[in-house]
Length: 279
Picture 1 (cartoon, rainbow, N blue to C red):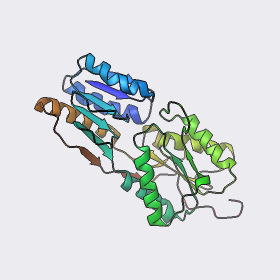
Picture 2: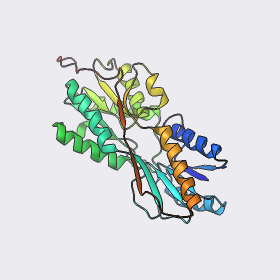
Picture 3: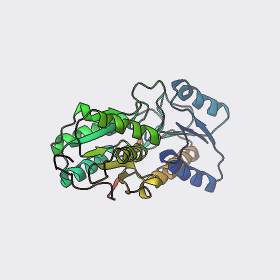
Picture 4: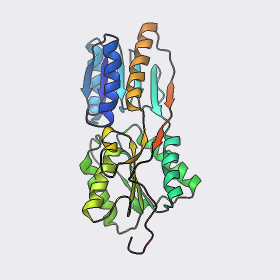
């Protein structure tokens, strides 16, 4: 098998890779992993290189599908309908609504947002979910309280803690008051909490923070992170299982989309807003 990823790191990708690896090893399959770091030339070239090395199928993890492939393929966090490719994704509409509804029920009205990286397959669909949920819940999305991670980067890559820290500082530098932040993912959310702490703001007393993914670190940081849980390991196992079934059947036919339900996990990083003048 061939597995194409932006990067193998502690969080999102590593958890999904664990599920892929478990299933492939149980079934006796060897696999190659290629990391493209968001570079368009490598996203184009690496599938061909893997196929040249006689892989029987390809799993694309949070990687744009450029074209149909001559071998069975499964795309995790994929949304684009391409012939012969099965997409496995969490329902972003339900996920974003659950997160914003939680903040609204706590009393938050001025909410800041980290929009996803330009190179992430989920960015467009998650942002559409946020806009739809905000409209339904009566929340105004303010441009001055919305920042896109790695906007303008020549090769947008996966999140690191430092970017969450830096972009939270940019939000604070606007001077615009907000009582909650809904981050694109857990890594940027955890980095943002560090920036808030270093400027004397308390989470959740002064600013509530919500993440997305439920990576392992989310339940160990302090305060523990409220987040949307994606079944990351299950997504990896499901992708590997679907791919092997397609290979076994000798057909490019299969489900075009497998949509998984998210779970909203409430922890310690969210609370009622501090509405005092100095808050």
